[in-house]
Length: 80
Image (cartoon, rainbow, N blue to C red; front, side, top):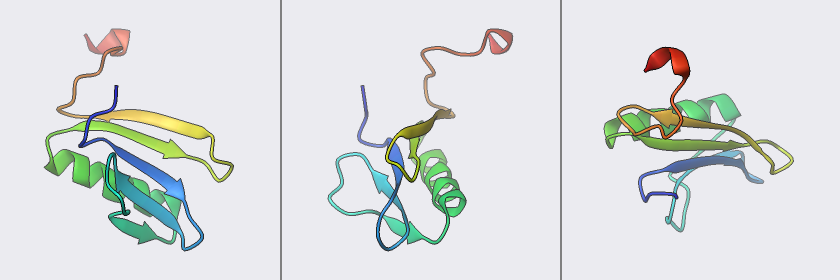
């Protein structure tokens, strides 16, 4: 279930967008996916953690990451 502080990175005509879930507009447009993802990670760390979802150019989800101190429902077995 997505939370209001969770973020998504996706492609637009202007570049890569970093948007908070539930927001009408993107917080920023970046020339590369990497820059948009790093900005989203920084936003999540500053707001207390959450989920970062990254979409590829084709619109399919590429990656989903829990940013600390968020609660990862399926932590890696070696990190318990």
